[in-house]
Length: 218
Image 1: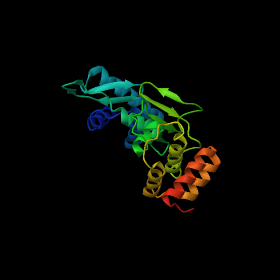
Image 2 (image 1 turned 30 degrees about the horizontal axis):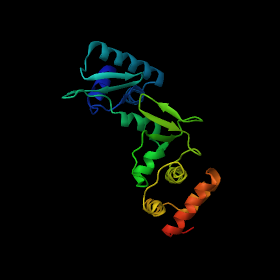
Image 3 (image 1 turned 60 degrees about the vertical axis):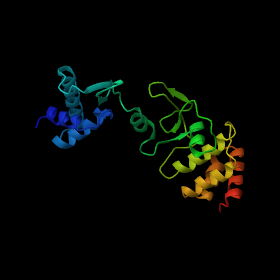
Image 4 (image 1 turned 90 degrees about the vertical axis):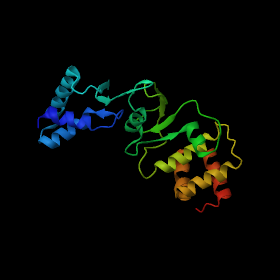
């Protein structure tokens, strides 16, 4: 099997609309053929260009540099790339981000007001809120670097902090928060420590009210 045949076989096995990353192909090619990374990257680039120029895979489409996808025609036109997968790959996967903002409060049941935009706290953000127009999301830096261990805690504390800026209409918002904390098996002591280190005083007060109403133990 040639490099090109290997890549063609891989692409045709991918689900429709799923992002296909040339970086992933290069790594697999290097492993399969015992190639150096730079050679695998060059071979992938050449193979992808040939596939596109010759239309060897009619369903293959170019999205942007390093990203392709397979499409099909539906009654509403040609299927586009799955942007949810793009968002996850760029901002959420590998425990590097989580949803926050008004959308988080809505999903938690703290407000019935639908959010105007999706906001993601992610390690990929720098020092301010930034709009990703292509993916139709906004990103912001977290209070501290997100890890697998602290992600759920930071998201919960974000919700408490954002209660100051959102129309909370849940009948018992602190009970709602407490139920989420208990459902996710979060430790009150860890929430308290992170809130004290990274969040404003009002967040600590919301946490205290949540503990009282929900019977959380330090």
